[in-house]
Image 1: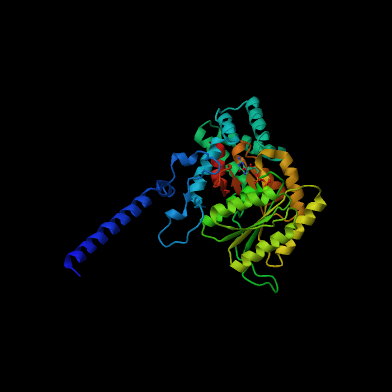
Image 2 (image 1 turned 135 degrees about the vertical axis):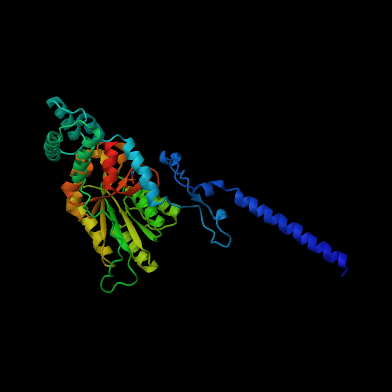
Length: 389
Ligand SMILES: Nc1nc2c(ncn2[C@@H]2O[C@H](COP(=O)(O)OP(=O)(O)O)[C@@H](O)[C@H]2O)c(=O)[nH]1
Ligand SMILES: [Mg+2]
């Protein structure tokens, strides 16, 4: 072959190869959204996000070369990031603590001032019993203190509210891998059962919780045991797809919820997943029916391994009515923790105290918005600080 042809060939390879490399580089540079998904928290992150418009999209075309092609996947926000954002949102709701604080800071309180404080506490869903004892405590402290120094008053009120919320309670989710039931195959996952009245936020919480767990590098299986409405399984599947979590569901509307729950626990054990989260229907037809359905779901799941968490989902905006429903659920099935949703929609944070006292179990998670990452572990100190503004 002519040497000139060899030289031309080499030049051609360099030009074409270089061009392709540059093109690929530009394409990589064309996805600033992906880059911004990993930037630190900013003010915009504190604002409510539009449904389906989470900033953390990641698609297959953005992935490292050689990675498995996957559908549009989202990377959920980390725990510290969401705590900070949720705290800001809670403070924005204007807690009752702030109102009480402003009266207390007047110093030399008249009977009228005390009545104002009492009214504020009562309308915050603290209940009469807690309000009365808190009033006594505050009156005593005010006498001892004998000052209107806002900092000192704040310290006293903060301590009293914190005592009511009880920072000593264990609020961690039980995610320990359970011991398999006798004769069960596979490696059972930690099981979480989500229960509560229709509309309180169960399905949403299952999805948000899956995201929290994925952000903690856990593998998750979701079970759509609300077979009452086909839309419920669809809703859960959408959540699952967004973070790349398997969803076990029945194609048949009205299928046996217990059998779906069992299949989900089975699938999780076969896959050696870390956690299985099972959504249920919230029909409150009568207590016997509820006990029957939830009891059966729990029993069949326990053919694989014990259920470590039964979370009661409560809507914080429903006040006393919600409390009555909660009682029925807690009698129907043993509750291990409470998820208080829609705290963003109420300044009545007193419900946290009331529900813990009446049900005897801690609030473990709180929902503070409709956004995908608007769920966080409940933090008593952060909560009280937010109430005080
Ligand atoms: N503002 C607000 N809305 C919520 C929260 N959690 C759930 N929701 C909304 O409540 C509605 C009912 O939720 P869903 O999960 O379907 O309730 P379920 O019937 O118990 O499964 C939906 O519109 C959710 O977006 C929350 O923490 N804050
Ligand atoms: Mg639902």
